[in-house]
Image (tube, rainbow over all chains, first blue to last red; front, side):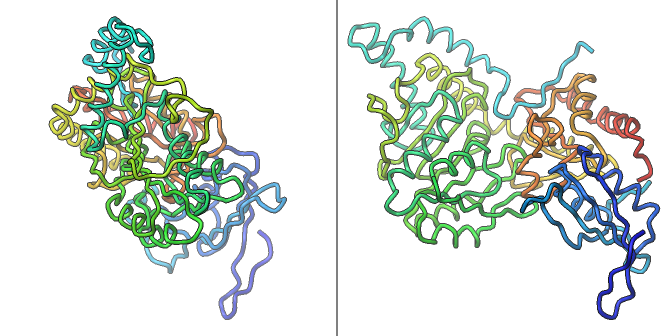
Length: 103
Length: 378
């Protein structure tokens, strides 16, 4: 766990980093899903990726699981990888979306 | 597994028997050079003109407006290049939807030279944003607009009539890619240029259709030839076979569409029942024979291989199934999950029991791939 962010009056949220660089689809999303089962609800995950499919598939996974993508940075401007910051649905943020099947 | 079920008919359908018969006859009768003036040459020319007349009748245009390309990609490229060059004083920008074929995106970039195409977004069902489209075509510097009749990957139909009205209002010609539609659904005359792909309706290889209304201004982009659009002229036997096949599939188009719409509905229900699976595209306003879905935590290549092992040939828009690293730009533009993607395009006259067998095996195939990846319970 890394340092927290401060957003106004909100309590600081903890952020976990996931290094998915070099992994091909669907592995970045699978690693993220695994991490999401362990990370605290309501925390953030910063995913680092190189597979272009991750830019599309992480937001799609988040939508299907009721999480929120806070920001996506594509690997432009010389960066060798992209990042996606995901806010994991908190316990007080409503039920999982219909169709989600966490088995 | 000896039994094979072909569910990847988009852009390359199994050959229709009328097409193979017509091809044999056309090879016997139409082998000569249609540009030569002897009897053999004139016979080939008559067959070629007959094919063009048949296409013109189906499309609702004049015979001289029908040009025959060697391939659908060549038809798309030629349409874009000639019109952008012809309208270079207006500007070289092409406006096109985000879900057009890769060949159209490439042609728009190439013909635009330093002018980037204006790519109009689509909604989550794959349908173009009409308001953004109307703004884009009305902007200065636009040479051409391009919108597919329906998307061959996800099936969604586009609002072509409204898009054509907006383009016409702005004085911009519209190219309609009907490559996934003609032969399967009615294609209305709301176009200035239109392409169609005979391989998609079960005709043999070697020809594609580019229709260009006489009012469209075309520039010169190729060396001089009797056929300015496709130098060297058309493949006569392939053209005749394509026209005969089109006539055959149109004769019972609505019956074939109704059958396949029912079969697609059963596959849609089966896919939707697979855990963590999203069925994509418009549920109703879509091609009758195309369906796409994506399964979470599944490797598209592994799923395609697993279905192939079980006797089913399917397509996929997942990156891991192509040599390119990029996933399908269509799925990406829709905001859909790009991994674990399966695309089926049903051929005509597919027995119902093969569809039922696919519906039975699909959940097991997905589960088998997920077991290999150890992703249960995520």
